[in-house]
Structure formats: structure tokens, C-alpha cells
Amino acid sequence: MALSTDDGLKAVYDARTLGGRKMGILGLQHMFAMFGSTVLVPAITGLSVSATLLFAGIGTLLFHLITKFKVPAFLGSSFAFIGGYAAVVQMGAASGLSAAQALPYACAGVFCAGLLYFVMSGLFAMFGTGRVMRYFPPIVTGPIIIAIGLTLSGSAISSCSQKWWIALVAIAVIVICNIWGKGMIRIIPILLGIFVSYIAAALTGNVDFTAVKEAAWIGLPFRYEDTMFSLFGNADKSLLLSSIMAIVPIALATMVEHIGDMCAISSTVGKNFLSDPGLHRTLIGDGLATSLASLFGAPANTTYGENTGVLNLTKVYDPKVIRLAAIFAILFSFSPKFSALISAMPAATVGGVSLILYGMISAVGIRNMVESSVDFSKSRNVIVASLILVVAIGVKYGAGDSISFGAVSLSGLAVAAIAGIILNAILPGNDYKFESKKDE
Image (cartoon, rainbow, N blue to C red; front, side, top):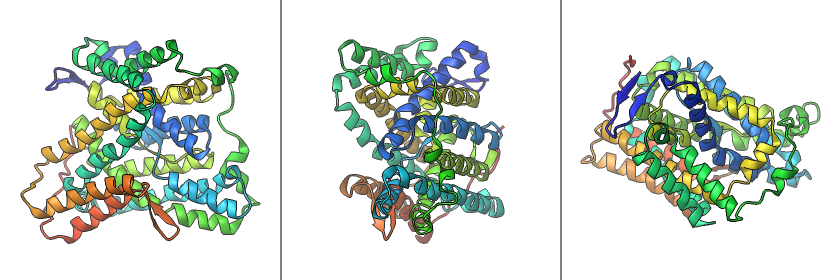
């Protein structure tokens, strides 16, 4: 099925009409779109890149199974838990453990955090989406979505500044292909932007391929000693409990982000995924993917804004394309050489692509509020929106992106989301009624 959109592109809900070859290319585009951020999390935390790719793919397929194959979402590494990993590594160091030895304890905390999604899912199933969503109206989710894009933008600018001309090549290719491209060119701008920018950087000597040459073609994505299973029978129980207590509360924030992402995808695609298949299913899919990944030493998973940006650019909304991207990620996770090739990609290339995609995320948040007719003549709405945006961005760039509450460290986005939800709930005038009808 294809519907015309305002910018001339047809919205495609069944990618089989494009043919198998084009579907494959679109799947690769989605995989490359999530690659930079997904690989960055293990690079920062010390977790395995290959295991990260493997469970991003498996987690995405699991999510699609649980959500009845309806939601075009890709699950990649969550940045929200980075502070939690760092905190556990510090606690491990105090107990005489190396970072590699402490990370399985952090994974245990993330495993329990994933289970908390089931509790939230139960609330939606018990009380109904409409009643629970009263606490997540567009005046809350819209600014959260905007803040997601804006808080990520700093990392994009930082990456671009490594070599601005390389970033500008990626940006120019994406813009030219998406605005003036014809046929297939117009719906794979991200993939072309990455490819052209990477090649340009390589030809000018701005890529170091040493690690690529040394990497093996085939290898296992994870090691036993990096998994949670290595703790069985010889875990430091005190450190294990402290790790769980430090990391589990972060899930409260990531679940709010999840709801914001689902709103963004629903708004982008034009289907009400909050009702069908329902937030109770999407939450279970996200939580189960996170818990499974942590068992094998991979980072927590989350629905990825980069891929929502790709949906917005290409107008190809078929979840089958996302599942192809997941399969590619699984296959490539068994090739250390491919992981090294992607890791060698210039930061400026990733930055240029991300700059476009993160902007698209924020634009979806604005669109979410416009389409919901949020009334900014009401002071309560202005206060709620402004607080979310100022706190998220202020903590990100003014407080090192975290505020500590005892042993718990929350990101600016998490604090902003929680503050916005509470403020919206207590201020008079919350007349939002969630539209619960299912899309045809």
C-alpha cells in the first residue's frame, strides 16, 4: 500500500511492492543508521561491539514478534544506562575488581531493570492505555521527543568537528538525494551519505584501516567471562545488590523515553501503535530485549530515534524492512572484520548523518504537538513544556548530563521526563483524553 505525502514521496506500507533488491538496500540503510550510536555505547562502557550488534538484531526481532510484527522500530544500545555502568565499575574498583570483572555486575542490574518494564506493562494492561496515558499527553511526550533530539545533537556536533568537511559531504549528499533524487536514490539518502562521505575520507587519508586488516573474518560475538553467567556461584553478593539498586531506577526514565519514542513512531507512520498492538506489548518487547542482551554482556536495548528519522525521510514504513536490518546486524556480528570496518568509519561521517537524524527526531516532537492541537495559550502547558526542555538541555550541558540522588544517577532527559510527568499531573487543567481507537 502506498499513500501520497505532502513532499511528493509516497508512503509505503508494503515494501514488497518495491522488490526484494530494494528492500535489502533499505534494510542495510536502517542498519547503518543505527550503527554509529549502537557501537558508541560499547566503546564507552567497554562492552563487546559484536555482542552489541548480535543482540540489537535479536532484540529487534523479539520486539517485532511480541508486537505482532506491526511496529517499524529498531532496538539499539541505550545511552541512558552509561552512567549506571560507570557507577558499577567504580564500585567494583573499590572491591579490587577490574572494569572487565565489574561489568557483568552492571549487566545484572540492567537485567533487573528490563524486568521492571513488565510491571509498567501490567499497569497498562490492568488499567487500560487511555487511563495511564492521561499522564503522558502530547504536552509531555512532545517536548520529551524534542529534547531527545536536542540532547543528542551535542554528540553530533562534537563528531562533526573532528573534520567538518567530511561531515558536510554526508549532509550534502543526504539533502541532495532526499530533495532532488529520483526513484531509489530518494529513499536511501542516509546510506548514500554514509558511503560517499566514508569513501571521500578514505581517499584523502582520513581513515585508519589497521584494525580492519588485523581483524578476523569470522568470530564469536561474545566471551563467557563477559556474560552474567560468569557470576553464577562466585558473585560478590554485596556488589551485586549495590549494582542492582544503582541501575534499576534508571528504567523509570527509559520507560518514559520508550513512550515518547512510540508516540514519535506513531506520529511518523500515521498509525496508532499505542493502541494497536498497545504499549503493554511494546514495553514487554523492549524490556525483554534489554534483559536478554544483558545476560550475554551486551548493553541495554531501546527503540532507536535514528531509525525513526530514517522512516521520516524515506516514507517507507514497512516493519519487514526493519527486520531485514536486524538480520543483517546479526549476520555481521559474527564478522570481527566488518565490526572493525564500521568502527573505522570517521566520526565526522557519523556526526553528519546524526545531525540530520537527530533534527528529524525533534521535528517529530513538534509535529506531535501540532497535530494534537496543544494549546499554548494555557499557562500550564507553557510551564510543563518549558520545564522539560530547559531541564533536559540544562542538565545535559550544564551538569555533565547527570544528577545524582544518592547511589542513583539520572540523565538530564530522565529528570526532565519525570519532572514533566509530575508537574502535568498536579497542575489543574489536564483535560487530555487519549484516542484509543485502532487504525485500520
